[in-house]
Length: 80
Image (tube, rainbow, N blue to C red):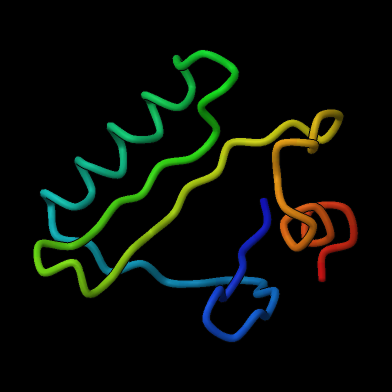
């Protein structure tokens, strides 16, 4: 698992998510869809009702990072 504070370009060790039930259901559904999807789908966006807050979930394989940008690859490989 890797966590990126996208706005500040910082690797994080932990976060707390405060979700409404509907948001948790959407996140759960998005993760299930990623697991069951074809290999070309590797991420999903979950927004709150106002689209002010967003969670992007990326499913990755340590041995196949080519589809990810350099920043994402560095975060996965080096944790920074």
